View 1 (cartoon, helix red, strand yellow):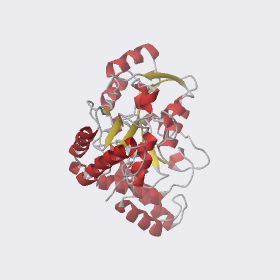
View 2 (view 1 turned 60 degrees about the vertical axis):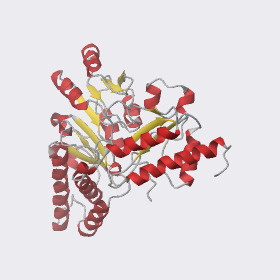
View 3 (view 1 turned 45 degrees about the horizontal axis):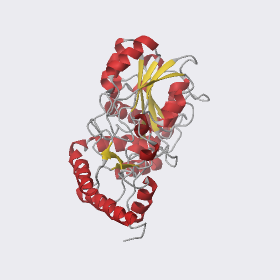
View 4 (view 1 turned 90 degrees about the vertical axis):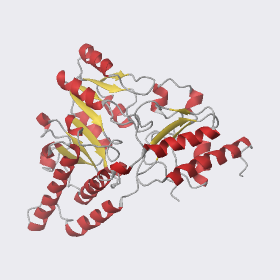
Length: 370
């Protein structure tokens, strides 16, 4: 049985990605920037992968820059802005956005009780703060809440403001064909079955030649360094494969898990429960016990969960979302996140709920194993 429920942190390598990586590594390992025939073939394959990604996200191929992942992409994006630029970011952004944005004049957009940004609030802030950029993640990495990014992207266009979405959790879980409506998009391969150390940044059309890593002509001068074509091929292949199977996923499995949990735990607070959410994600405030106790005891039973964002784990009160919703310090210590994969079965979801019940019984007995 598969007990892995931390897919929002990283996903296993998809078999199709592994096969494409091996094939690319064997046949097209040459430097795409070299001039001989085999290097030219590698360059052609690289550009083919860019075109295929274009069709998946709806952004022109010339806007796509391949990077080492979303953290690099997010940092590069903010580094290109003028030092005095005003930027609007939501109060629940990923650390790679929040920390990178601190280099500029940051104004936070609050979220409502469901963890969502109000488009009308963005309109007001645009009119009063005159930002150069608005940054809003498409799907939250902790709660799974789906932000109204398309509506806010349209508001930004109407007001001549650049819009960025961190689409890391959206990609591979929902239809991504409209992402190209955003000026900037960031993605990371290992969140949807690709390899670690590979991702992309989509730039605005007018900034398509903007260079953020210098030292060579790669990526039309925008990011120097030899392109990792095998990893890029694996990333695009994985996204293609998963996108073709999105119609099979069922949020019912998530909801049945929550219902089962509520037969054992009362009260159980599910963050953003009334908001539209990713089909694979549940962020809960448990009614009792420290989240690290839940994590370690479930791990002994073969289940992998998390206490929030992997980029913040290990820090007391690491949940950015629950903090933004005004939780107490004590509640923050009881937060756990469950995030399944595309092939997680109903039986595996229910086995996790049963394991939670077992751990609870163990903990109320003073930590003695059952």
